[in-house]
Length: 290
Image (cartoon, rainbow, N blue to C red; front, side, top):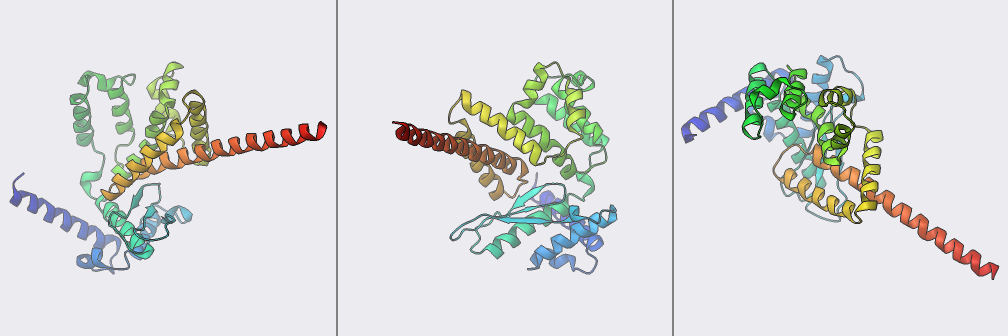
């Protein structure tokens, strides 16, 4: 792409974002939106207004922040949006407040960008996405009409989310990404469940503590067959999370991997401690018996 054309497209995108700001936050100056130090309040206000438009008036509209424990800089902060999308600060921040503002800025930019027409799942977008998927695999366009194929399953999921935004689609996909990573999708295929049946079943569920606990148990079972696998996978997840955060991208998949593996690791150590404690008690009991 030529420099002049690229700049024109960036200008149009900025104008579109400023138009969205003027609609979503009418009392804010669009030109100063991303320079406003109170970007945390702006992000909260944006999502409160968006949820009100949908008729949601509960805690579902709450923007949640999480700061990593650190004795000193650089500090890391995550922000989770209603629906589950997660972003973090990508700059090196010398204070927790700065990290929180930077995370909020990344989330606000992505939230606004998500409102652009080009971020909607349309018939044209579905066709282009399927064609890209075909070109990157050994499949054909005919596979798009067969839900038993990976291309067909992808096409079915896109069609099921026609009219939704990319963030909304990602929030649905996170469950299937984790099931694939966890090995659960492969196990379900081995039980002769069709891809369409699996998609229809899991599309009804959101990622919650119960599902995380089940996935953590799966990793504890893997640990029995391959000792040390949880620690190795956790190191990979932490590295992926940091790299993706510094790139300013959506983080939920990597953050959920970290949470699930951390849960499994804590359970593993808890079980080991219990076994060690029981051995100590048995030794004392035997000593007393003698």
